[in-house]
Image 1 (spheres, rainbow, N blue to C red):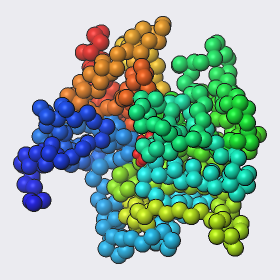
Image 2 (cartoon, rainbow, N blue to C red):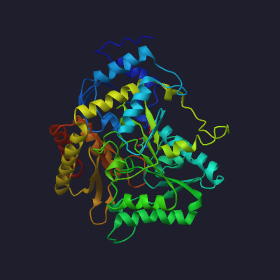
Image 3 (cartoon, protein in one colour):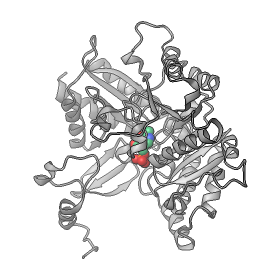
Image 4 (tube, helix red, strand yellow):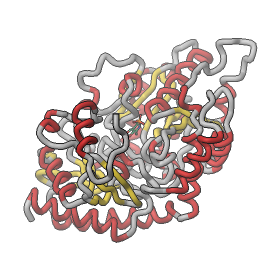
Length: 461
Ligand SMILES: Cc1ncc(COP(=O)(O)O)c(C=O)c1O
């Protein structure tokens, strides 16, 4: 096997890929007649493919991950130094970067106090689900075990997280799912479900209370929500929504689990998405932006109140959280995460995210004046969506093949954007943008200019 690939000839890589790789999210038939895309190098906001073609990345590594941009030697050096010193020991013991990152992270999350390290966003969410179930057994005889999740939200690819998955096309053909997960309605005002109400946010949150009352509050242990729904169409919560959600959770003693896998670590312009809305969660999960993809790390963070529940009876061997994630003991993750967070602080990237986030929304709103196909523009920070409709009055979604043509046209122009894809029947019609938090005004304009040109070619005008 030759792993020394010569720089200018990636034929062997392409052939190895075609022969042996199973890519994520893809139907592979097309790769029998076209080459797979190999991303070879990245720097800042840009990546280069096997042909040397440059792309401006409007989606931070495809799935809103590389928050501090590509080619950060500082992170690579910190990871290298740490791996040479101490690469791994199970998390039943501590590590220097594990402790130091936990302290730093908690300093950004007033009210939270304990960090549990795992590998992926799905796994972080599963840890919460297990804790909810165990708390139910400890305190409520197993009765208060149901976990509420929201239509259009996504929490991961494992079977338990798919059981809490609000996207029917993602879930199709993977059932049966785990029992004890109950769906509540989404809060997207553009697709209003309650007629002409003035206080849409409160009404949408009241819909959660209706589900709780139907199920019986003494059976509901937790409510799991994304602060801003990501893959379900970049859904920003309507005003008043989160305040009412918090009231409802307190009223029925329901633990609030916020899935920050996408929003966490700066994406919306605050450290965490929930901090935009004054929410006080019991659990926060995060993954993608924690180390910007320089190492695999995810965290489940909770309060001292929850932590205390698992050390209340030291003589009972069934009392503690009997769980492990092997790679939660890898030190590369927290070593990378410390540098990632320092970069965000030192380069003022939260502030940049707020300013550039406003610019992206302004630009998209300007495009909406020009292209009738844009029915709704939504977003928070460097996290934006444009929902495409065939008719603004009826809000009928455009054919999703046309949405994919817009994405492909941008790619042709050297700009990578995303779109909701095989997630919601009939509603895979939202263009998604999540550039790195280092984006400049020129980068933002280049992304929206590419969309402008693509919309013109695909829809006319
Ligand atoms: C909101 C949300 N939660 C959880 C996950 C799952 O994370 P992972 O793919 O790391 O398991 C994702 C992934 O896209 C996500 O968007």
